[in-house]
Length: 381
Image 1 (cartoon, rainbow, N blue to C red):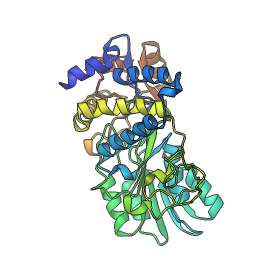
Image 2: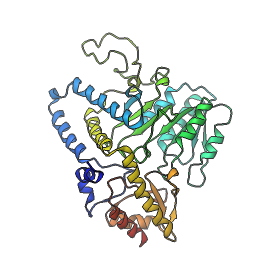
Image 3: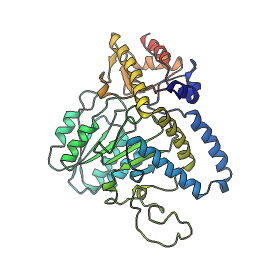
Image 4: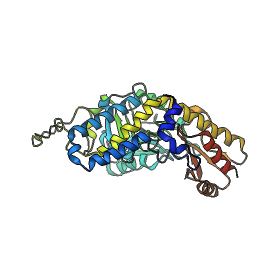
């Protein structure tokens, strides 16, 4: 099936002129297939005898498979989480830091990737260092210089800035970390979808990603990737009753033995929202059907359209880097009066975000070009 046919089938209601949705960096809409599954899941949940452990476990197995396929991982490296923050806290609390170890991050990063490390510094005495940005943009060169300093044990970054839309070069940063035996931790929530990733080629130790934005899934769904060589060396700091081997055999729950699974399931906190992961599976199947590379290419075309418009308009400050290599699905612009511009967009039915004094537009692969034109016309007024 062609991409346009998939878009019409799954996002027909978003093709109408009355709805202009440019806010996927905040929340992605459910595809039609996922919406139908949500209704089916609610019906099943109303009759719980239809929703036994076999169904639950099959759902989670499918989730790990779909996520692993998306990022080039093995299912055994995927721990299902309810949000990005959980995976970042997993990294902060499970990696064996000691007092005096240095953790490097970027200024102007999203709070979810800052507060766990601030708390770790308070609780354990690690040295948490925040590298200044170059204006509003992550300073990749400064990050690379910072990890050259003695005592650095981890670099933690967002792949794509929620504020500016700048993309960091994970390959370059990961290789630099691997060469120095430094853990590399990535928040991928604003990158995965507009960009593609193969963790079998990119040196990342732990990656965390909620799926409610660009991956078009319900709130309360997400995952952490933990590199297979690392999984067995880390212990969960919060222990679920299903973190141990044999816990899926409900006939022998009282054979207490604290022997963790030898895969990333050891980090999962069960019970998970099985019905929501079923809906996530349907959404990810749509992305796989369309093709992650094709989806990313369409988003790149749409964001380039916004970039070129901003470059032509005097008085419109472009925050996002203009080259494809340093941006993803977010384009941030600063008009002369951002709050007034945001109010105009809202009044005209254009869903967007106002972040740190900039208008943030985030089209997805299903966004019609004419919707962009309408929104940009409102910004031009």
